[in-house]
Image (cartoon, rainbow, N blue to C red; front, side, top):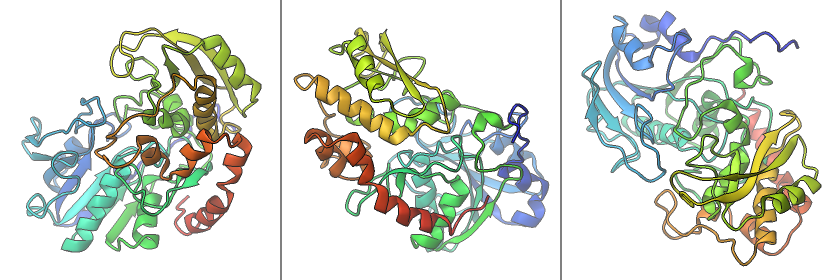
Length: 395
């Protein structure tokens, strides 16, 4: 297919607005949204819903980083407020609660979810969705998902399946690190296959196909979270997010988070050479030095690598990320450290294990299991997930 021309896509938000009276009727609507909840004109979903005379918008809800996406760190709670534009109450679902309470929903008949996902299991927005779905099931309220593209396409499925007992707010269900689904398809999976059983309606997109990366469509890109600046960030995120579970910088405090990886003790030439010798598919590692302005190793010169994707289709983000962690671990055993608790308010587990959704990945790295054998250990779980996933594909 010719990809030089951007694929025209009609977003779930836009489809909902063209038929709002038939879809929502007289329902009092609550909207879960953030700064990336925009249409092709970059108009915000809250403003569009509020101006639509056929929609009775009563309440707004924001995820991690706030409804305007201005809160940087993983574990800074956002508070409740009043929206300056609409005058409506805003309830944070990353505050003293991770799910809407019955009191928050007292003026709501239907919850509408319109957040941009990045295609990775470790992203809190999809669990904000799951939590809200469970509450709607309990309180007999409707739940709508306005679908958006998976920015890394809908084909790649990679990584271990999250194991029972390792659930957290960055992994609630047994899915792989790279799941290859849209938020609408994830909602169907959570609802039908994992037993939420709420009154769910997914407003699907028109024009999106599974092979399309976000920047191959005409859809507007707005940072879905402060450290997800570009589609390139999303492409590598399913692999380099593992560094959040280490004391190695994942590039927060730089202009290219998750693409720049390093620490003060790393010899950048040595690391890039060792990584490139692995001949991982679709990626090259360039030796760099960088100075994070905040978070890990703030204002310290870090040696490391820039992760350059040379072939998106061939690139395997998860095993590449594991290879990066393993290589740094093996080269710098005396200096390398796993991150100490907590991570996403989990105090009783190693943060790397929380991200991995298993103890096995860290144990495999520590005991010298090869990259090929680590990847091989995922195969049975991936095969079972693909069969489950096929039940909910919308595109």
